[in-house]
Image 1 (cartoon, rainbow, N blue to C red):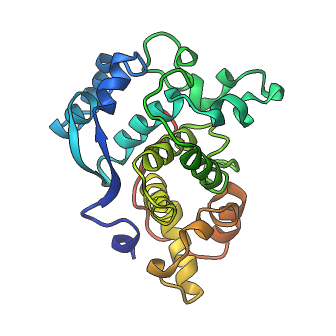
Image 2 (image 1 turned 30 degrees about the vertical axis):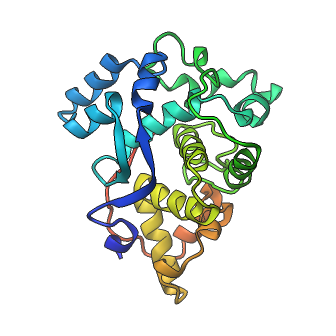
Length: 250
């Protein structure tokens, strides 16, 4: 089951990264030296990471258990800084929260030049058509994450902001809605491996193989939201831990 949910060889994503790493660095959204230093201290900054941060990448992205956390941080920067109405008029700007700068997804992005809010929805890395934006709006409202009960449309944590960045990237490159849902489930599974192995176990107990699940359903609040997942986890024996696909900090 683990290799079905989290393929050992990784999973290809239907997007290319191009020079977005360079754009993130040139704009000051990511301070390359600070970012690199974090990974070098962890003993892991391979050529792949260097190329994604500063090179031209024409091949499709691939997510693996090893690079899931690094991609999480890249997508986080993209989601935070790319200009989008979701950030400017959505839940993040609700006056009840006293500003968008008070969330983990903003204040917690500690690798920028200047302050994170200096880059919040400030850079036009990706330009979406009205149809593409509508698709991002629709899908983001229905992708939840087990670390909280909010959807990607309310990206108050790094996983939500990273998923927003990935959705924008996919939409900008013409990925179909079906493939966007499928990819989002794959990526969430690598970011929250224990969660989705548990959900896969639950589905198996219901007689449904993981390959046959509906990504839109699994990504919804009833399965992927913190409350929904807690109910599911209480009904099954959790599988052995698969590790941490990406924490809540850089």
